[in-house]
Length: 420
Image (cartoon, rainbow, N blue to C red; front, top):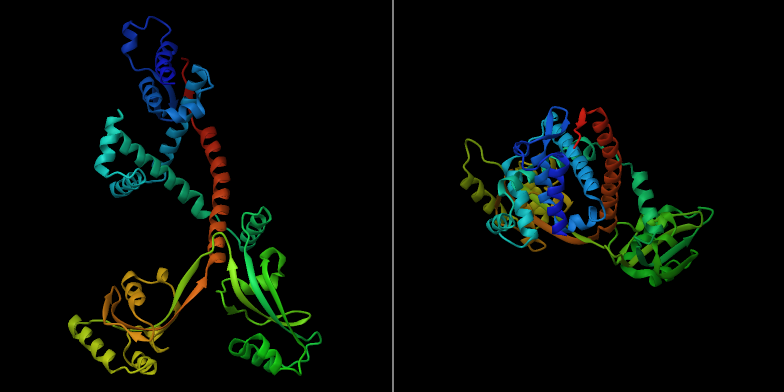
């Protein structure tokens, strides 16, 4: 295989120089193609041939003649030149830091250090600086496509839902719910909603059987569906079950038959993901010209030691917190996730025991103490599935627009290929 690559280099010389290869002409670097205001030289093509990896050659070039290989390679070089010119027109500049990060990722994938990566590249016969610039160019082209296509694509919720339905139809996505159902039969809708709400409240404390016995004056039934595929359930059930954790109850679901309350016993999915959410309160104090950071910290220690319970925390938050949005609610931040918080806050929150107050800590917003009321685990599978679906739809749309744009880019360019 490498013999064919070596032979190809010689063939290129022969194709370009029909005359005596030992003549003085061979020392000249010939122009093979003009791409707008840039040129592709014989030496450029020689270098491109030398860069072809063995695996790539087997996959893309092995069954082609020498001339077909040269034509395909030249076409690639023309498109590469057009894309580089486009990045320059759009003012896309890639920093040394971005290139360094890309090199670190390559080194990590190959399980070597940066210095060892450099050594490996040099030992393979490549010019390390040229390799680095190739990485820079690749990042620039990727950034061009990201900014001009991917980031501008709009994806509707209907497109996401249709994508997921098609994936389910193909068996790619298949969620299975283990559910029990409590039904209050009321086709005429004569039962007062107060009684329905009361039954719902009792279900969470008494369970299905005791609740049914308690409301013997109403026509109710209990159905244990067991494991049921999502595609077999009514849409109103699926909608209520989404983002629900195991051992939880859905909201009250109203249908033509009456009222339904589902208990989710378990949910299985190949890509099932549970995420912790934290019910947290905080008090924020910010230093000013009259108050030092140490004084702020001491004040928070004093407040923490004086607070006896959640009610005390709420009162102090309303009185002292600099975070007015949460302070008016007693410091209540609601149910939050680690991903939505600054690192300093999330780290302290995760370490704080439930029903306890943290020590004072600092973030970029100022100094805090927090109270962790509770933690719950939420099934985030469907949310992640939707995000993945949106990403894939955007990629597919961007790819189509990209192909059209690249085609027009070549059509509108001045390209002259010399005879060789």
